[in-house]
Length: 366
Image (cartoon, rainbow, N blue to C red; front, side, top):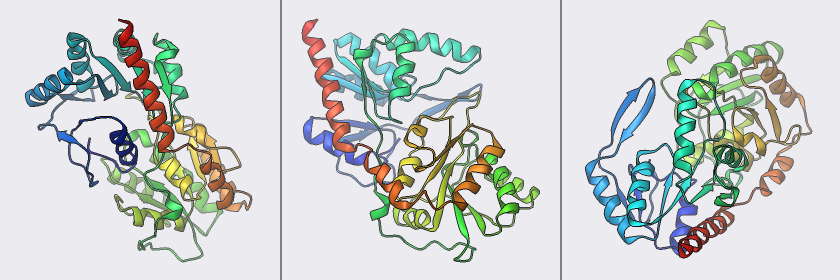
């Protein structure tokens, strides 16, 4: 992947402390001055619905020469061709390996049992884990379950690239009157996001609250199916606006909405590591309704800055949407107060320094 806006502040801080060379899959939408190289064109294959990337020869050569010169190799996710190839090279040169991991839940099925067995084997050969996603604790429990020693796991949390309550909004045209209360979904339109359950819940909400409206900001392979579902349900106050990347437009959408809904689900293909939109919405002072299908729900405090509902439960989701539409107790001030308690990029850097110090210290013992 390229550099995402919510990663850049952390990467910039890390580059000031460590001598780092980043290897990115693509350039991405964010301008930056990081010391980096970009990978060759990535080959991808699909096996039983799993999207796998194959390391290009040029990337292998880059990694091989870079690992020779480095003290520590860091990569994202155990189940990543860069991580697996880098791990082999590191063992060859006796280098230390740090992995940022998102996996947090044990799913049923033969494929996941095999994957879990392989993860146990691989994780024991990784020197430390840096858990920067979703508060980290669910991932820590998962890694301990996979046999990783707790002292090898360093937990931090995610933080948005922008505090949206401070970002100047740019108007986005919406077909709703000023008095109508906008419910916002912002994210990809793929199965794991559970948007169909939000649309079904809104069919209940629309009947009970005639001044409620739903905005779907995002794109993906399910967009046409979701638009068809909205038509079949006879919804009148739903609007699909496509993918929104501009931070000023996002700021407007947060400001115009009265809540953000993140209806994620677990599927037979996996679960989300943690939608960044949760902390983005909180930074804008907007309450969030999430589900128990992602770890970021730990940031949501029932009745204080939103609600957590069971995944796929349309009735419970509709009930909580109606609660937020009617309540006056979940205020922007209260939501921003809970956001202020989330630790930021300096804390991430502090935890990364502890992680690197740990693997270097362990290296001197061997």
